Amino acid sequence: MTSPEESVLDIRGQVCPSSLLTTLRLLNMNAESLRRGEMQVRVLTDSRDAVVTIPNAAANMGFHALIEKSPAGHYEVVISHVAN
Amino acid sequence: MTLSVIFVATALLLVGLAAGFVMHRSDFCMAGAFRDLFLFRSAFMLRPLFLLIVMASVLFETERQLGLIDVPFPFFTAPTLFSLLGGVLFGFGMVIAGGCVMGVLYKLGSGSRPALFALAGLVFGSALYAEWHSYLAPLVKQTTLTKKMTLPQLIGLPALWLVLVFVLLGSTVLWRWWRGGRLQRFSQVTSYLQPWQAALILALLSAVSAAVAGVPFGVTTSYLKWAAGLEQWFFPEHMSGMTLFIVQPVQLVLPFSGAVITGGAGPALDAVALIQYPLIGGIVLGAAFSTWRLREWCWRGRVPVRQLVAAFAGGILMAFGSRLSPGCNVWHLWGGLPIFALSSILFVMGLFPGAWLGSRFIARVVFSKET
Image 1 (spheres, chains in turn cyan, yellow):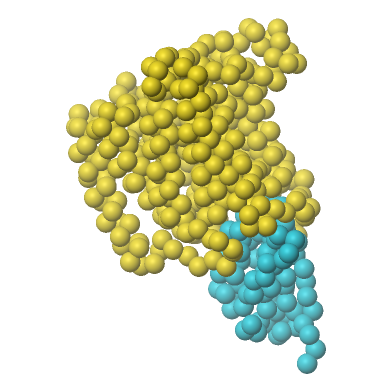
Image 2: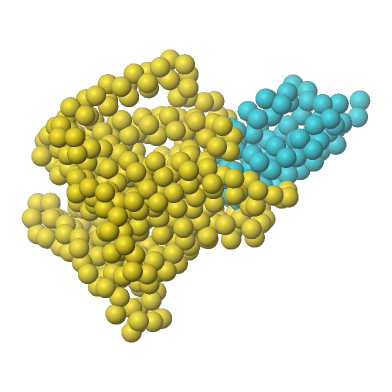
C-alpha cells in the first residue's frame, strides 16, 4: 500500500482565524483525494486555538486528525482519512 | 508617597503578569469570541466571557459594599450615541486586527508579528484621533442620551438589587451550560487552561486592579501617551498646542499616603502611566514567560502582507472606537458591564454588528485566495 501524498500547509505566524479558514479551504479542495486515502494534509501552526478548532472541523468533515508538537515550538496537525 | 507609588506599580505589574500568563494558556481571545459567532457559528468563547462578567459583578459589588471602590468607576461617562458607534468601530477593528487591545498585548508577548502591526496601528490611530479631538469631542457630547451613568441610577433602584437579579439569572444560565458540557472543551495543546478557569482568575484580577488603582483594567490611554511622546519628539511645536495632550483630568488618590497625583494623555510619567504601564508590561511579559516555559516561541512562517495591513488598519479603528466611546472592550466588558454602566451596555451592543462586519470583511478580503 503506497503512502498517501502529503500536502503541507504552513500557517505559522498568521492572524486568527487564518488557520482554520485556510485549512478548511484546502480540505474542501482536496476532499475526494483525502477520502480515497490518496492524500493527507499536514498543518503547521503556532496558534493554540487552531489546535482545537482544526481537528474539530476535520472531524465534522469525516476526517481524522493527529496532533504533534514540534521541537521547534509549533504544532503539526495531520489530517487524513484513516484513524490514527 | 514613593512607597505608595511603588506599591501600586508592583501590584499592577503582578496583576498584568498573571493576566498575560492566563490569557496565553487559555487563548482567551475576546475578538475571537465575537468573531467566531459569525464566522464559524461558534459561541463557545462568549460563555466564559459571560462567566467573567457575572463574577466581576459579584466582586465589584462586594468591594463597593466594603468601601474599597466607588461605583460608577472614575472616568466612566454618560452614554452617548458614540458609545454605540464606538463599539461598532471597535468591533470591526478588533476582528480585522486579529485581537483586541488586550489580545494584541498577550499575542505580542507570545511572538505574534501581526500583533506588532496592530499595536503600531493603535498608536498611529491614537495620534490621528488627537488631531480631530477638538472637533469630535463636542460632537460626542451633543449626542448624550442621559445624564445617568448606570442602569440602577436610570431606573432608580439600588445597585445591589440589580446585581442580585443578574447573578441569579446568570448563574442559572451558567449552571445549565456547565451541566451540558458547554463551558469546557478538549485541547491537546500543552498545559491548556480551560477558558472558564481563566475567566474566574481574570475577574479576580480585575477586582484587584479596581481595589489598587480605583479603576478596572484599562490600557488605551497609554497608546495616546505613546503617540504624544512620538509627536513631542518629531513635531514638538505642533504637539504643544494640542489640548488633549495638555489637560490632566485623571486624579489618583494613592493608597496609604492619601497623596493625590494627576495624569492625562500627555507623554509624561504621571497617574495614567502609573496605573497602565505596569499592567501593559506585565501582560506582555506574562504571556512571553508562558510561551517560553512551554517552548512555544515561534518566529517562523510567512505572514501575508494583506494580514499585516489589516492588523495595522484594525489597530487604527480600535483606537478611534476606544476614544469615541470612550474606553476599549476590556474597559467596558470587564469593568463597565458588571456595574451596569449604560455606556458599556451600548458599546457591547455595538460590538456585535461591528464583529459581524469584520467577519465578512476578513473572509472576503483578507483571507481570500491565500494558502
